[in-house]
Length: 429
Image 1 (spheres, rainbow, N blue to C red):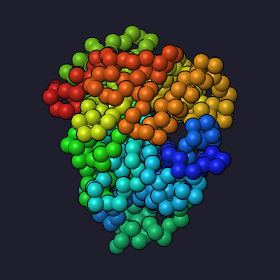
Image 2 (cartoon, rainbow, N blue to C red):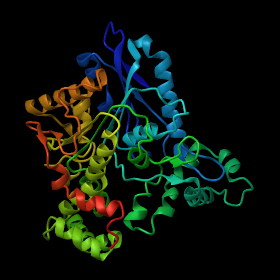
Image 3 (cartoon, rainbow, N blue to C red):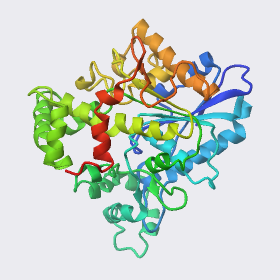
């Protein structure tokens, strides 16, 4: 855990940040999460936390319930309640923020039963949350548990759990990728949304529902919420699947023409290709736009509509493509695009510290960073009345760009009516 507070701080609002990384990587010590500028320039106490990842945080099955990473986060929130006043923070004015897996974590805390002592924040921010992603139950997790425990040599033990507890952490970590094996097959989109290999589990006690269910039914912790995306969420992941350069173009084209059929079925795939047309050289771009709308933009807008029936909801999209993006600089496809996590350095104003890619901003980008930082800290200070984010009314969101502007047609531009029908079962073939 890291804490930054201004000199002489007293009763200031507190921003608690949960890092992303797919529940398998990341830590709060990375330069991009350094909270000094936010604390020093916006009169806010900043807390960044760590939590157990991968097999250590999320292995689950009949012998154990998992969710230890979420419990770590809950413990950190309790620690803030007990101790943040010493650092000049007000424990009654805590906002919980997270990006990607961190945003999934925030949604998880929002979705927990009211009887659980997780009410340690008064507002929430979710950056790039793939809200369509579903959690598996303990029964659904058992195949992963069986494969992993067998891989480490505990498949025939009377208690696989006791056997694994005798192993070193290095051994467990070394076999972590075996936990992905049960989710490689059956790649229809209905299965893919369950396939984040390491993730929270609906265990029936700590976690009783997925966030999308909680938001849709109103059974979530009802506090003001900011949620949003960047314009090209999934584009930066494509090189991981298809490679860079000419090879990536070739394999991306093959997937565009055949893989979509496997994922969605031929009829739906043809409709997707009609909405996201591609040429021989830009199939990756078409795929990136389609998958971003399907997995991020449209689920976020739908969730905002559900949430806004109960509490104030504010929606944004970062559409500015950074001159240089420290987290995605190695992917040529992200040049000229706002790829997943591009907003993080802007919110923390840490481009001078995050030296991957030797990135620098233009003066206008530095101003945009300040604008985004102020939006976050203004919300943290007063989550029911903020001037630079519009309250969600079903259409208006703020696009962070040069210059920033209100947009009323993001849902239409993202073909959300089509994706809503796909995701919620109105289209089946």
